[in-house]
Image (tube, rainbow, N blue to C red):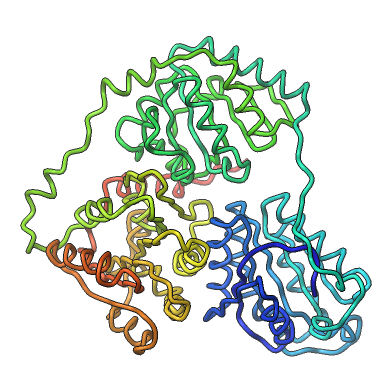
Length: 556
């Protein structure tokens, strides 16, 4: 089946309902198909690919495949990623009959999978007739691109290779209609915001994760250049604003912010948040000291100023670009930051005996030194969230993690997809042992695809992030010989190098080898860490999230 063209790779897992579909996908010269070990990782790979290329796709079989991939699709929905989930469905002649099919729950109703996907996609189509297939597929894909959310496309297994005149032409690229702001609403919002911010003494800017979906990264930089305010990022927006910018002050994450960002943001008399998401994790258990009357909240299509005034049909990039022309230069808050800021020292690393057991802060000190414009960092759910948040990203260095959904194991598949989409970068993934045990199989696909990422597997014996929220025996996992596992998967086919490090000396040697002699190989470095060696930020964050989770019932 051919229609309008979207340039992408597709991750897949074969099943009898999608085999003919896969034959035709493989035949597409501009589509790269990547077979994954399971559907969950195929979905995570599509998520990672979409983060870099703007859209990703996965193909699975009916129900057993669809309900396996749905967790990854839910994560993509939460992160505003357009992922096209293609399912090979039942034969079109079986719809509306009393037949019971395999791969179902044993009832003659084939809508169970569709009803599940209705909750985690922005559009769902079932292609069981060629007459409207072209229109349905076009509609679903364009909706994914317009709304930046996943879509579900089910194609009956007997239609995948069936010819139809609507698919006879050479496909052409998608060209979506341009969204426009309401000019009167935009003008009113900009005038109100300019008046609000120009009256402030020490205003600040804070970048949220939705600047990506709004495609407003450049207007955000232009606004920062124009106004002179200090700029912080929310944790989920790390990498969405250049950290070399002269007014960048770090991550605003409440009590676990990078040094002095908290004090500057929460002491401001006005703050503009561009694309924020305030949930229990980003608010550190709802403990942020922000006041609505001081805030301008800029969402992709709406601007809210103070406690009440709200302007709809205003696109974020239009608003930020217009606002930059109306603001007076005000560097007061940034000057305050410069007065109190003390650059972090490196004495902690210099004093440690290089033959002593390796500390996690030493690990990330050396990861920091590895980063260049040719790097990309992926942080798995866990203490890597906090340690990676403290990394200073050089110009051109990319960064990703899944904060809203926070599904452990996400990073293995996402690293695969991101690396496939980023041939110009060497991907560095920081993954905990507990998360790795969930999705480790697709190390195999990485080797098979000839990818050269560096994976730091942090082996500290359990679910450390859960320990700091609420400890119990369920947070301890069976220890694996992770390097031996990866060696077994490698099986001397492809390029893969593994090592286990226990000291800083070991780590330095491993990094030297991974970045030079083994730079064209997948490098898997297992880091042995003490189970209680956690970041200060995780300890603080965990106690506050635990308190939020443990609030007593308040009957309404």
